[in-house]
Image (cartoon, chains in turn red, blue):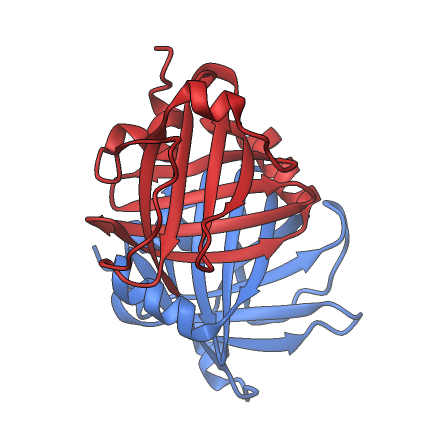
Amino acid sequence: MGIEIERKFLVKMDLWQALEKPEGKHYRQGYLLNKEDRVVRIRIAGDQGFITIKGAGDGISRIEYEYEIPKSDAEEMLERFQPEGIEKIRYRIPEGSGLVWELDEFLGANQGLVLAEIELSSQDQRFTKPDWLGQEVSEDERYSNSSLALRPLQS
Amino acid sequence: MGIEIERKFLVKMDLWQALEKPEGKHYRQGYLLNKEDRVVRIRIAGDQGFITIKGAGDGISRIEYEYEIPKSDAEEMLERFQPEGIEKIRYRIPEGSGLVWELDEFLGANQGLVLAEIELSSQDQRFTKPDWLGQEVSEDERYSNSSLALRPLQS
């Protein structure tokens, strides 16, 4: 079990587009179960597969259980169950003090959306805000990946 | 991915009770998702934990993906999500030609029910029927573990 503490922000698109980015990794994920208090997610991240179970969120914290599984199993399950899902490119950019910004550039029905996330060890941990960082949306449920799978930005 | 091909039978209780049994293993399992075409099961079997995803059944066959997880995670998830579940003691009895009978003696709300299962490599594989074997219930959905979790025998 892990408790995921994460803050999430919109991105200033002009500054983001001008940024020199490291190579991104392709993510494809679908939700076998997608409720507010119980999520079962199948994810393909680059050449790895994962199954993740998430519990109810409490502010910026959320219980999470994640296990690596064969990528071929993850592909088969996404193919077989055709769950609602999302696709994105994830870029990892060092924050400067040991933390990492994960920037998700969404594809498909959420194309045009870029979200920046930072995973913290405690709710009040401080971090450096880069100039491309926009409005915080940590507690805005519309921007969770599971919501974006059900209600894409373009709908 | 695996395809599970399984035949399932009731048991003649007088003969079963008179049988000398090997030591059984305690199973406790709950269903995070329990639909006809999509099941997510958390299982504790003795000192091991598992997460299992099952697809739609087709007669006696069913697609199944199973992964071992830490037993402590399985316990936590059953505690946290309180999913409908079942509890049973499983006895393994050799069938004689390399196959194994799994006899499930249900506890709790399904107490009094004993089911015998045999896993086959093909739908038409033959096997020996012991004298304690009762009526076949392979395609009777009421006797699937996921149904017994939702609608226990005693209800």
